[in-house]
Length: 178
Picture (cartoon, rainbow, N blue to C red):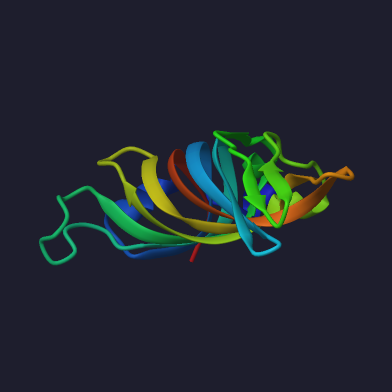
C-alpha cells in the first residue's frame, strides 16, 4: 500500500527542474548550538548528532534569477519531527551561575515520545545533481535537554525545552511530492 502512495526512490531528481512542494525527509549529520532558559539565565551548549527529520519542503530549481549556479536547488524545509534529536550529544556545556545556583545542560537528550517532535524552519541548498543537501536553521526541542541545578542545599535535574540552531549535511528523501 505504501508503494502506491510514496514517491519512488530518486524522487529528489524532480527538484532539479521544477518547483516542488513535498513531504520530505532529511537524513544525515548535524552540528548545533542550543539554548535553554532557566530562572532568567541562558543555559547553553553545543551539540552533534544525526538528523532524521520529516516535514514539508519547497524547492526552487535552477538559477533563481542568476544568483545560484545551475543544478543547485535552494529551498525551505519546515520540520515536524526529528528522530535524530534523540541521539544528539551535548558538549561544551559550561555551568551558568545565577541566584546562588549552578545550572548545567546534560550531555544526552532525555528519551521519550515528546523529544521526536522538533518543529523548525531551515533554509537548504541541494548540491549539484546529487541527493545531498546542506542547510541551516532553527528548531524547538520540547523537553530536549536535562538541566541540573545545584545550590547549597541540593542538586536537582529536570527536562527543559531548548532552541537549537544547527547546520546539517543530509540526503534528501522525497516521500510525497505535490
